[in-house]
Length: 161
Image (cartoon, rainbow, N blue to C red; front, side):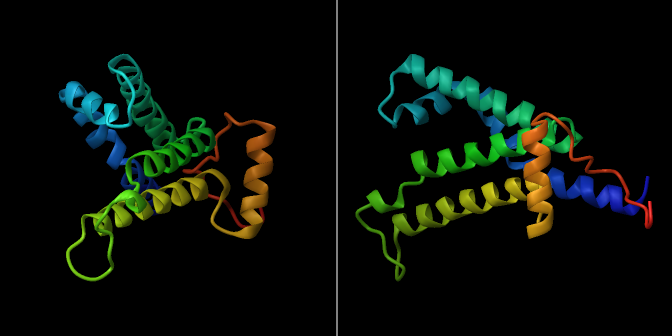
């Protein structure tokens, strides 16, 4: 195993660590609390339970996809959408009555959480499609041709080959 492969693995591990193990663990050990949090969106107990089960599935299965490289493009796109939806549903800083950039503000904390979710979504899209203009085009083409293919994150390219 080369240093490059270890670094690639550690980068992906850092990217998914929020979900697997931490958020997934929270939902598993305090499902009732997670469901209650989901119910703050105005949904009933059953819908909130289904939301938490779906979130648990996404957090575990898609994180494993990104980490292992199995259907990692698809998994990264799902996690990017998940991050954006989480930001829009749970991090509504614009609805707080105390949002301010100066002084103490609950809204400011939610603002930063919102943008952290958006940044995480962007990082997942870089996993799915690539970090630069050329690789994005190639990544989108590869994704559209076969959404469940691997980006082969642990392959080492060889010069001239």
